Image (tube, rainbow, N blue to C red; front, side, top):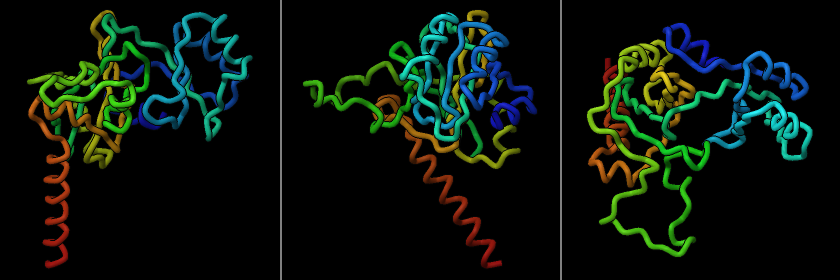
Length: 222
């Protein structure tokens, strides 16, 4: 919620969202926002705990069942679902507060969209071996020469909030309107997708951190 308030200060559109501290208030929140909607743990990580509901009956059934899992801090976000015309979101990567590149992420298999290799299913575990000569799955695909009018605004947002490294997730609705729904300030990269595209986020981070370190050394010497 703090992220959304900070983004709103820069005029960045975000999905309508309510923070609920007790599941008894979720039906009222659903009435306010309308369906379809998603429930999100306030602090979940890699999409864990995110559930989509297309009807009030499905929501009521979930809330009454043992499958409902309260988040650690007791806060659940009730958010209007942005229906994209195609099953993907775009992750904008920033290093040193500047736009680095964009990654198209396939959402057809659900909301767990962590790009890091440790978040992916081990190919050996499903009976297949990874081959470096074969392009990685299209779940994560770097978009060459990506452009968006949001990028300068997001760079200003990052500078104002002291964020040097970020992965910012964007979704487009059926009318082509862009919504920012998550700001990750401890980003992850998918090494296969980056290597296939010839871009290396970790190298950019290393250069950024080296620049910061040298700045501190100069400051101490002065």
